[in-house]
Amino acid sequence: MSNQEELVFKIKADFLKSLAHPIRLEIIEYLKGKEASVGEMVKELGVEQSGLSKHLAILRQAGILISRQEKVMVYYSIRDRDVFNVLRLIAEILRKKLSESTEMLAHLART
Image (cartoon, helix red, strand yellow):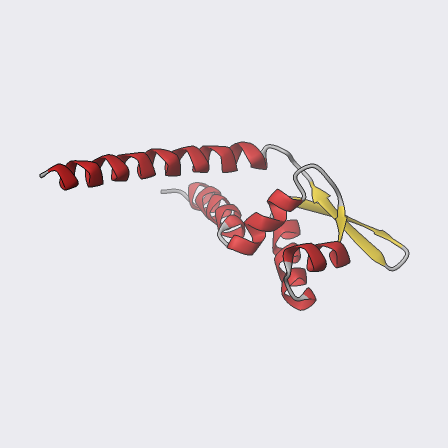
């Protein structure tokens, strides 16, 4: 494998890692149709500001969120709505997996 291919896999893995936390997924869903300040998200998501700030920084670094400052307030929003396509595909994979597990449990219950 070439260095360039390794770099591409690393970039993809880093992007997926940025999604791999329940609070970060909750932030993305919360911002789905709106822009919100850090204060609003602290109140609505029930997360401490220091923890929230770390998660927001990771999502910004990954290019998922953008921020803008207005006086002392910082507002966040989704940079590229295609992230919801990724999350929709993941949800579909998990639904299929759950359905298969349910079928297997039903089969086991009959035996």
